[in-house]
Image (tube, rainbow, N blue to C red):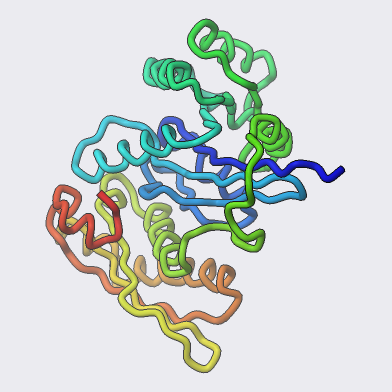
Length: 296
């Protein structure tokens, strides 16, 4: 008798910078959500698809849940909450190295009320001893009846297979929503934009990165080379100088590192040209947020 196919949708939620994008990339096997040590780096819901012989799990990655400081921040929080409310399984991700916060307890309460199967994913478990994980689990006693608790290291991949096995147990019977060859619903252009933004986040400090949007103006093929022309938008003229750097060195560094990752994604040579432009206070302009590809 043929085994019944199981499929469903899953959301990864948690505070900013807890490792959600790293986990998503580990599951998908390639870089599709930007990974940075700065919070609030994921802005749009990003689908990644896990397939094996009898299962398909469609993941949505969400921005970290935080207090919004501008219209873009409001959009990011709304995206996270919307994604969590329309799935079969929620992965609630916490950091093993940090104390449980009131916000995290509130998220756990909301998950309990929602009735959605929720797995507590304790990331960075490789950074602490086992005895330090027990108080984290105890902090949620009486708050949320988790379907499972799984310590992992999204960075090394430890525990990820166990997590997927726990998720498979919770999946409902269902069809294959997407072709097995599809890893993400993101277009190459979107992924390239995210890769460029990741490099900006890596090399620049404080508030400059979060006032950054990247837009590819043109992407074309010529003689087995992909030519990409992209604009980096910032909110202040002073930020433009920081991004360009002395004698253009910072912009060259961003471009060089982004090009390497984009070439790996496309599996071909890439010519990347970057411009830096100023759009004052764009994060508080609904029109500009939409222009940069965010659905409000």
